[in-house]
Image (cartoon, rainbow, N blue to C red; front, top):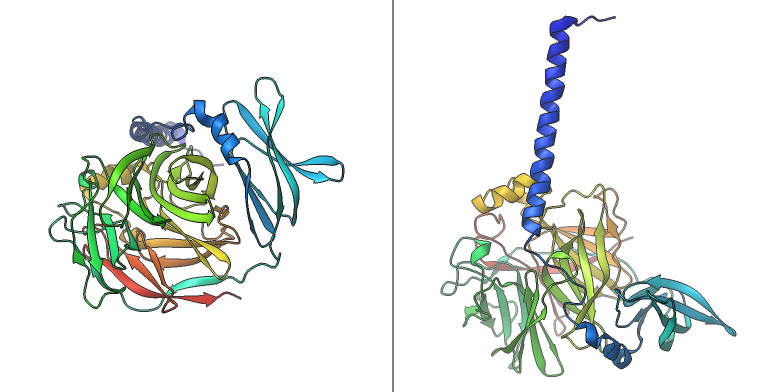
Length: 449
């Protein structure tokens, strides 16, 4: 038996008390910072479709379907404060429940059949038919899995000199004249996110250009924060979306001159909404992927739209859980980008912003403790664009397929060359790949056994 004596006992108790004080201070600071950064952020499922118009939209949209290898997806307009939804499949003369949800999205892994969606009143329990559809999955054989690999050196793509000093999150597209355009975050600082209130624009005839893209007139200068633009074209109209904390949109007839600015989501469903990317899942249905955070863990949220104006939250495209390395108060799953390759879907996420409070405190002072993590991009795979699984760390991530050294990358496919490219960008004070410019490199896809 070891006898510590009175002095030894006092020393042990002092150590225990000191540890308890340190832990208490750490918890108070951690919780305090999260409350502080969350307080100005509002959330609301109905921030895009006015509540009084939900029933009208339900009647207009009905139930829409998309199909893939071994899966079926049903979608509709939801009213979660007043209803839940029951999806049923017809079995002979009867209907069997196969899914229940509060949102307007249902992913079923089955071959198909006749389905109906019932809206169940939260007050009375009465059922109301939203719509019936027949849907069949495609061939149930799973598409082959590939992983993207950076296949060459980075080369200069674009760096502004007049409108700003650098390019961070950006979008690349072809305008109506056939020219390539890059629109991206900038400011006249070395990376002060509070000054990022408009987008720099670069143009070129070819992609990649022989020289760098030429600077054009900046866009989206409305005096508010303007982050992570994304541009798509649909039936002769270009749409530009951007964030943070709300979704804004402009339209253009040529992809050059923009107007008709609107706030299309004033208070998204989860806090720290930013970096919205749009993917066309089917004719008349688009999916929006965004950075977000739940109660603690970071995630990629998924929204849907049937007109590129009104959006509804439908679930998480990628969740994270215990074992995930980064869960910042501001969310760590940044710059989501979804692409399809040979029948399979790939979600790219830049995995930034470490978990604990000191990272948020140090960021305004331009101190980044783990510099390499700024360029850490993870690629997840799925046989559908709705669900990329759960990430609980590198050792527990069944859908993780690749890890690339890039920040906020865009992926560009050139059909005439059958060639893929990847870009990278970032703040000059932290990025170890670039020094303020957006860069581009060839990308290849390698088969995974």
